[in-house]
Length: 159
Image 1 (cartoon, rainbow, N blue to C red):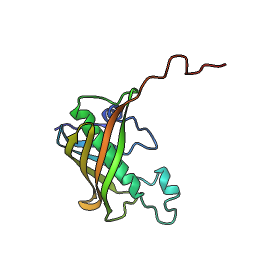
Image 2 (cartoon, rainbow, N blue to C red):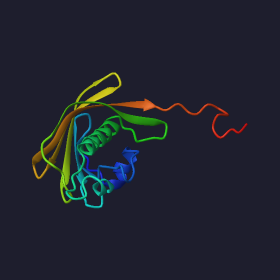
Image 3 (cartoon, helix red, strand yellow):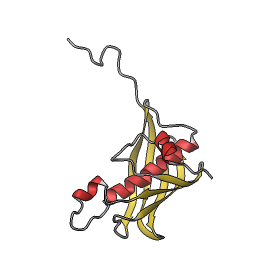
Image 4 (cartoon, rainbow, N blue to C red):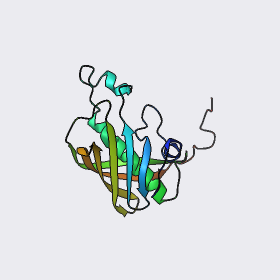
């Protein structure tokens, strides 16, 4: 089982502040599953508006954190790193459920398992927990796409 510190997380995800939602990987079995954490602090920029009188981590960001953990699992499984010539897109979500609020001071435990890989679509089952209690769950789908290089003469050309 692999443990990844933040520097290694950054090698597997193109996301950066304020959108990086994985702080550490606790367990990783290539081709099977990952357990990662997101430390939720009052310094998160979304708490300024969601909600100032009662800060709650948006559910959509909990799902994004699961998708980022899934991305790390897929890159590790493929023995790849995040590269400038490709993007790992979040392409689908099913059966999303939110069971409890996630608030500053919580540690979100992200558990993601590969359900199947069909052609270029990866399907996962994900759960986000706080202190062992289910906060969110969903089925996620992602795909890796190559980004074509810009056409010769099109970047920065002035007429």
